[in-house]
Length: 450
Picture 1 (tube, one colour):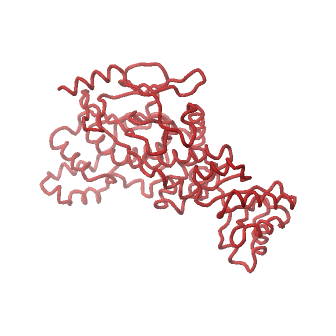
Picture 2 (spheres, one colour):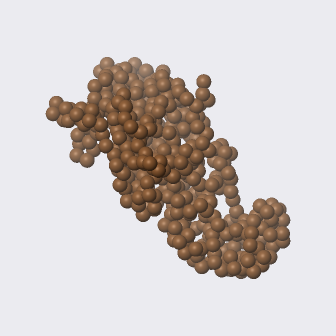
């Protein structure tokens, strides 16, 4: 039996009512109408890409699956739900059944770290209707934010062109919990480490840290602050923050430390100019092996500019722009019914059309092993290319061991390497071939005229 995935939720045993109220009213309504156990299929996908994105990196699956397997209501939660005014006329037995409700269905998903595109199923849930409805809100919430951050991180890593990038975003995240999710999502998309100590401990991510300006301010002189830090932690482990007072003077003080420190960090100012001048000072002092670390509201655009100008920066720290994905802070992730009791279901709302039936995605590669296009079929059809959706949960149990985080990172790196050239740059425009099978097209047309 595969080990259950770890949960990053503060209280993983209290997730049953972490949902929208209308899910609970529908669940009770399905039970009242005799529909609760009807086999249903729902699919999760993204309607369109956010501005400035040519692709997305799928993330958050391990936590979503782990929490789904634990999903339950406590007695206290059931009583609180029953006390809500909307349930005043509802038979208490319909709410009481929540006490024993568990997810016993199947979940198919693309592997975590996979590149995904709009209007293609990323996750498919097959379960009794009451269960499939129950998990909608939580699945969207659990997958939306990590996918957003992983997609941003992939762009930042690409802009750095091989220079290590580290997550400094815990203090800028929307709650400490978000900081945990962001550290994981950023790492699987290619970041080299995190300043988040608990994320490093729980997830095996390399921990990295320097110092704050407060350390320098706590000493009578900058030189005393630097020398004391290096003496306590060892020069070989020391990165000195040099811009508390005067950046270039700080670099000179850092260069004077014996034995030589590992690196300096510049957190403000004209990073291209200051890093160039800092490199010259370090080299003049025989500190050619001391690296330069840059931070300070960096994103993929600023990093790309620094790289393009030849700034001698060896590594970057990113925070706010990563964990908030400031330029594109939301995803249009949705979860829609596509079949009920074996019959297709469709939505025809303007701009929100869906295709019926359970689906599979086949990804074709060109002669160079690059993505050539995706073909969406009915689940039991076959087509050319790699099948992206694989079984993860079957009958309410984990079907296969989930990959380790380092394995997900390696998979994501392979996926990014397989992107066609026109999707690689941070200024790339979304343009990726995607088609639906004739079976799906015919069924969609048939259902339109019913």
